[in-house]
Length: 419
Image 1 (cartoon, helix red, strand yellow):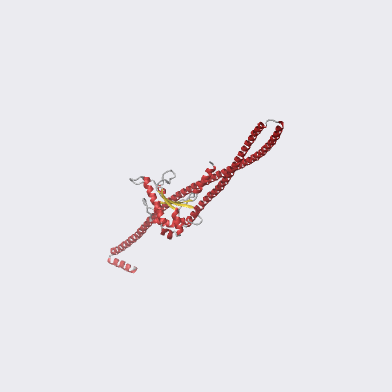
Image 2 (cartoon, rainbow, N blue to C red; image 1 turned 90 degrees about the vertical axis):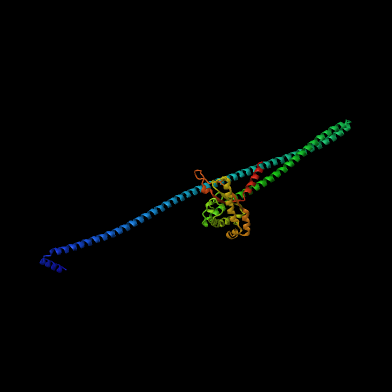
């Protein structure tokens, strides 16, 4: 190549074509320049492409970051809501604990009052016994007086007989003396009649005291029995509530059992559509999970003898419907919802196959379950006193023990003891 160029230069010098060689050189330079420019453009294009990719990656990163921020904000909001709910549940638990403490104090107060009444009755019994002893002492004294009076009568009769003999001997009027003696005997007989009447009154008092002692003993026995039954009922209710809480938790059923009454609250949104009284598919699925666990506890051999009633209550908020009385409209809606749940529970095929109840248990369940609508007579309030509409729309399932009759009987006994 170099030799060719040299030859060209020599030939150019010889022929005088120097500018031709310079033109070739410039063409080469232009080609080199074009090549450099093309290379720079290629490099620029590659850098532009990389920059665009970098910008796209940056944009996607920003989108992901924004999405992450939104998810983080949502999680923070959810955490705040859960924290508020936890605080509400904690406050409700504290309130229930206070109510339970107050109930225990009230029960202890009632038991203390009953103990005071028993002590008072024992004191009255001791007083009656003391009075009885005093009456017996008086009887003995009266019997002693009676014997003394009888001895005096005998002595007087002897004196009269002796005086009669003396008067007969002296020739004095015997009839006058006999009349005087008869008057004396009448007075003695009157005294004897009074003594018999006193003995009769004493015997009547003894009989009355014996009857009162027997009645008092019966009252004390009955009162002790009723107190034991009341204490047993309180213990049974606590055991049922504890058993329900454990079984529901073990079966992953998220409901709260009222620590005071054992009532379980099911939100209406879980069972019914807004304004509807027909169970939704979601509601039926939930009842299929909840009811077997709940009834398995209440109908168990340990607790069924104490259950008097299983109550299904419908509750609404205070919202009404145009053209209708709000309370009456919600009364009908709450009754229909409670009845829908009741009908679902008491279907024979449902009791037999879903709940797996025997015929005897089915018959028992039909006698226990009742349904009632409460309209918005028992609203749930917020902490500021305003109505919590979502919480007020609910169905409550609760149970009642056979303790009402026991309490009534105890009150009757206390009334009889304190007329």
